[in-house]
Picture 1 (tube, one colour):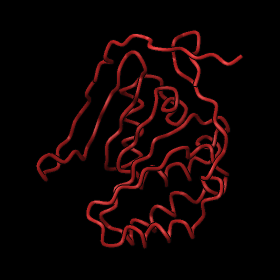
Picture 2 (cartoon, rainbow, N blue to C red; picture 1 turned 60 degrees about the vertical axis):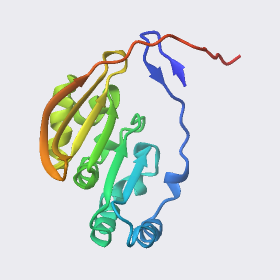
Picture 3 (cartoon, one colour; picture 1 turned 180 degrees about the horizontal axis):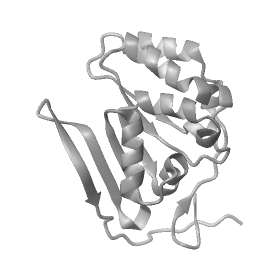
Length: 178
């Protein structure tokens, strides 16, 4: 993790386990989730995977959700250095169609949606998801949330747009590579 001159955090990533995930892993997940109450699958680093993983992720999630009907999928995006979302938009839309909760940074959301304003990013991504919740994290500005499927005491509610201001904080410790 390092801080850019404008104050935004940035990360150095390496393709990890996602590059090796295949259909057999999703079949194992179906067996794992069988019979569990309110199962949740958190997926991160979707754009730091192989092209094959990204291309098949939407279909794999769709099959998993057929086998585990109550499954909620959370996608926490990562900066798309290889432009997977732009190179494979149909695959990206298939992924979004299976996601229930999407958490994205402002720069990640801009890259995926082509929009620059937090409300427009959230609206675009939610429209491509169909039904769900989108959180756009905007560093020191705070976060933005929209949802057309927010459960309140078992009842579906909508949140048109909510701004959650960032809390003030002080730098506790700074590390530097030498």
